[in-house]
Length: 317
Image 1 (tube, rainbow, N blue to C red):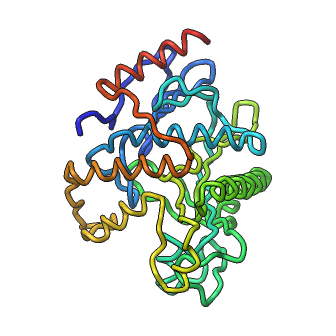
Image 2: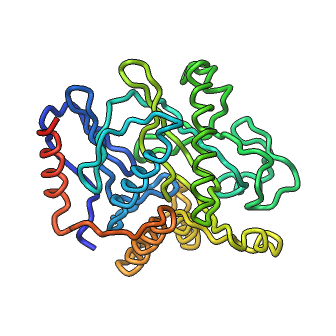
C-alpha cells in the first residue's frame, strides 16, 4: 500500500503558489499556467482518510480528462494538457466559491435530508411522496459553498449566493446554464454505458480575460453518483437499494462503522485489505464510466515520475 501519492512538495520552474484541496493540489506557475495533481487521498463526509488509495488519483484525472474532451463543444474548460496520468495542466482561473451540485434523483445527501422531513434543499422544493432514489420531475440545482481542507461544504441557496455577493447575477446565470448543459451531456454519455447519472457537481472559474470555464473534475466517481440502469425500476418497485457506481460504498462502510464526520466520532481503521478492495472498486468504476480498460501507471516512484513529466512538458512550452 506504500505506492500512493498523498502529499506533494514540488518546486516547478516559474512556480508562484500552491493550493491544497481535499484531493487535488494546484501549483500556480508564471504565465497563468496551473498544474493540478490528483493525489490518491480519499475524502468522505469532508474528512480526508489517513491512507491513500492506489491508482485513485490516476483514475480521477483520466476520467475528468476524457469527460472534458467529451463536453468541450458545449462548455469551455481550463484544460491544456495531461503530461502525466495524475496531472492536468491548464489556464489559471479564479475559482467561483460555490460548487454547482445538480441532482436528477433523490439520493445521498438529498435523501438523508428528505428522510429528516425536509422538503426544501438549498431553497429548491422537493415534491412530497418520493422514495429514496426516485427520479425528480426535473433535475434540481442545489449549490454548496466550497470548503477548505478539513472544513465542511455547506448547502446554500441561489438567493443567498446572490444576496451575499458570492457570485454576480450575470455570472450565476451562466453557471446555471452550463450546469444544466453538462448534466444533460453526462446523462447521455451514461446511457450509452448502461448507467444513470444520478447527481454530480461542477466547479467553474474565470480566466484572466473574464471567460467562465469548467475547472477541476467532471463526472468522476468522487464528484458524481451513478446507478446501473438495468434493473433500476425493478429495484425501486421492490424497495431495494440501487446498484451504485460512486464512492457512496465508502460512505456506507464508514456509517456502518459509526462514522459520519460528526464531532466526537473516531475514524475506523482502514486495513490494507480493505484499501485494496477500494482500489479495485475504483478501477471497476473507471472501466464502467469510460467503457475502456484501465491501464495501471508505473507507481514505483510516483513523485519522481510526476516531476519529470511535468518539467519535460514545461520545457516544450
